[in-house]
Structures are given as C-alpha cells and as structure tokens.
Image 1 (cartoon, rainbow, N blue to C red):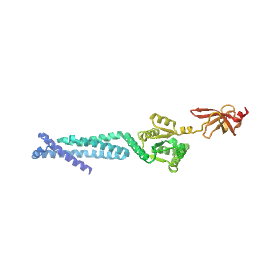
Image 2 (cartoon, rainbow, N blue to C red):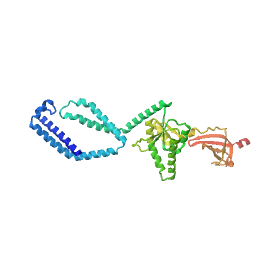
Image 3 (cartoon, rainbow, N blue to C red):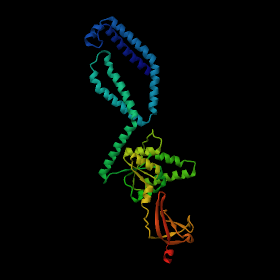
Image 4 (tube, one colour):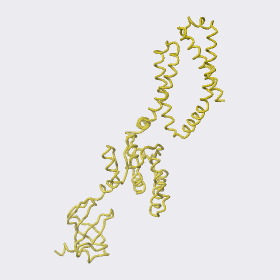
Length: 365
C-alpha cells in the first residue's frame, strides 16, 4: 500500500515536471494562466507529460524500497524515544512550521517550479525546528518546570499565608532518619520533594549484597513511608530526571535550581557544591550543633564517668547530645554519677569538648 502511494506521487510529480520542461523549452511558464491553453493544444505537450510521468513512476519504484525502510527505521526510533524528547521535538517542529507559514506570503506569488518553494520551506524549517528543540530539551524542560513550580507556589500562597518552599531531600538525610522527627515538630515548612532518582538510589542500596548497606537502604525507605503516612506534611514525588547527568548530587543541584527550592542533606561535599552553585541548603548536622545546650565555664552539671581519658587520671563522660566531657581526676569515679564543675569549653571542627573537674575536689579546696 505504501509502495503504491509512493508510485502515485512519483507519477503526479513526474507529469508536472514534464509539462514544466515543455513550457521552458517553448519560452512560456507552464503555470501561467495565459499560456496553459496554448501549450495544451500541442501534442508534444502531452508527450512530455507522459514521459515525465513514466520517469516519475520509475524513479518512485526504485526509491520506494529505501524510502519504506527509512520510514520504518524512523518509526522504530521514534517509538523508542522518551516521551520528553518526543514532546520537545514535536514542539520544535511546530515552531518551524509556524515560521514557514509566516513566510508563505512572500513566496506565494512565485510561478513555475517556484510554487514548490513553500513545501520545501516547510520541510526545512520543520526539520531544523525539531533539531533545535532536541538540542535544547534540558533548558526547555527546566523552563517549564520553573514556570509550573511558580504557578504551584502562587496558587498555594493564595490558600495559605506566606510562600511555600520546596525542600528537596537527598539520600543521606533520608537514611539518617532525623528528618522525620524534625518534620514531626513542625519546624519544616513547605513541601518535601523526593526525586525519583533518589528513590532509585535508595532501592539499589536496599538491594545491596552488603548487610550494612542493605539495612541502611531499608531504613531510608521506612523513613519515607513514615513521613508520607504518619506525618502531616506535604510530600511531592518528582518523576523527572536529568538523563545527561550521571551523579545524583549534580541532579539534586539542577532540580533545586529548577524548582527554586532548598536541598536538605547531611553530606558535607554536597553542602559545599550547593554553596558554590548558589543553591540554598539545609544541613541537619548544622541544625543538631545549633540546638545543643550551651555550657559555660563555672556551671555545674551531673554526669556519669564511663571510661578513662587520654591523660593520666582523666575520666570521660558524655552529655545526652553526645558532647564529650573530660573530667580531671575523674578516673577514680568511673561507673559513678557525680556533679562536676565546668572549667573550659573547646570548640573544634570535629565538635565541642568540655573540660571539668569533680565538684567534690572544689569543695575540698
């Protein structure tokens, strides 16, 4: 059926070309109304049309096989393309065709073979528009995602007070689990965004042959399930992906820019990358350090000495938040709960360290 249609098209175009050649040979334009009747009176005209039609049929028959194979290959490639590429390519092609329509009045009055120029323009502009659309698909998708995010934020702001931000969770903060407790307290506002590529990474970790990784991945999935079902927070599963980017961290930065949101993480390196890229980031470890109780020199606290210190006679205790307390002369009190007096506080890159001495020794002095 397709071969027959190609042959019919070849027949029509061949006949038209044969008549046009006869017109050129006689110094008249085939498509001119004043010369049509004159040309049709000649038997040579019909001979040229017949020869042209015959040549067109032969050429169409020869080219039919390659054309059918090329069309089948195009259909196969199109069916394998992601939906995003199909939509962007179709949009580019429509833009090219629209440009051809806008330019049509400037070439509409051409005669002869020039009347085929509009069709040629449509083919060229449509093809170029498709190529441009596919080459700029990432920017186009980001633009539409940004517009959609702004529209969602605008509609939400009409319903609730203030601006609703998107908090984009990465793999480390989901596995950590403290994000669920923070959400439960109500300190996190806006919508929690969980990208699909983060879910895939969690699934790979949960399916790992390593027991520790497998447990961490399953814990992360349990945390997400808890956030969705038990907590009163808005959760958005972002199904988009950035296929040209391989690293999950880079995808998170790209998504944060597209949604104008903030990345929630525990990863120190991702924290630095976000700062360099101008993306806002919320680090759970920084929050944990910020809410630790402040202890000043001279304060009295009750601790339990649990082990020896590095120096002779020292004992080590810990606060509830994990802060280490070095007790001078506390070795003799290992295993006991006692009251100590803070002498100094040392803040290091690894955390905070408190130095103290037993209050019993202070009273003895």
